[in-house]
Amino acid sequence: MAVTRLKRKDRKNKARQNNKTRIIKQLLSTPVIKNVDVEELKARFTTAPAAEAAAE
Image 1 (tube, rainbow, N blue to C red):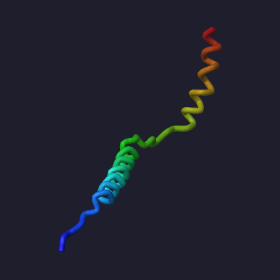
Image 2 (cartoon, rainbow, N blue to C red):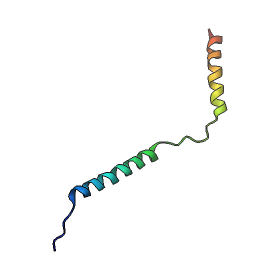
Image 3 (cartoon, one colour):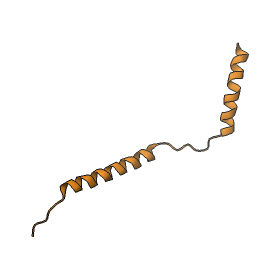
Image 4 (tube, rainbow, N blue to C red):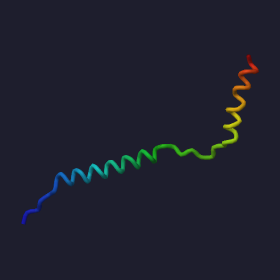
């Protein structure tokens, strides 16, 4: 008895798996922001316009 390969289904399954691994690799490659001091960032934005006005 001969074995029939489902070529189209095989290509589709491989494409699905490749897409999933590509998405996972993209998610892992993005850097994770850690230890951000929110108060310091707020202070930077509130003092920057005041410093420019004083310089003029």
